[in-house]
Length: 229
Image 1: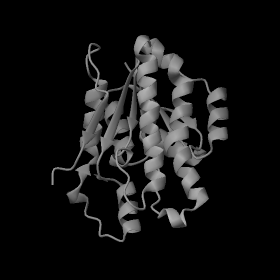
Image 2: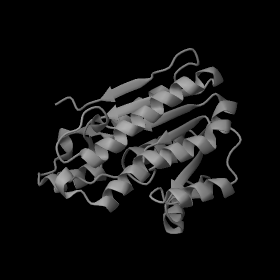
Image 3: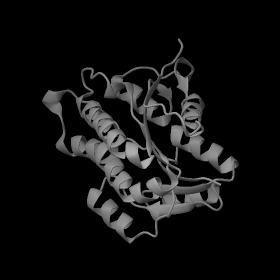
Image 4: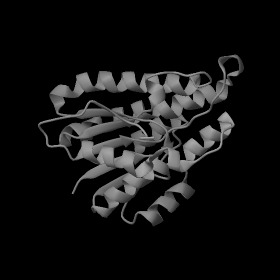
């Protein structure tokens, strides 16, 4: 039975991943931003354990991790949580800029750092769910893209550092995916949202599960998933 730590299990890609790994009877440790959210996740995933911390509060997250009774072995750490706000540079709001950096970049760093001993013990896999915006920045996407460019750098450095410890590191770059986040993006862009145009969250989740299920002799450093249309 494998042990997985997942951020962003409340919706979208993270929820599909949690569903499928729970169906395997694997052990789940889920990040929840509040006690109320933790109760919702615990009801949905009986037997799962909760780590309650707000990813937008790096200091609080660091303290919560230091105080938590973390697992001794972790087969996968799945960074799925993310936030997005679209604004031109001329109108960037510092609070929204900082929140994107905190949730999308700093929180994955803190989680990875705290769980590295357990990942090494299991020769586990770290998956960073990035974005097409982590490869190319478009107008109004500077804050989100900056956080995702940074996440790519974090993953690349970690991959080299942990090679000798048997920890595999994969970055997944989904294109537009039918999730609540994508609905928000369309609203910010002033566009009509049609989920059928985009990749299904289950398709991206299946890609991540493929990475987790690879034999120990191989790894997938980077993989992009794009809608076929």
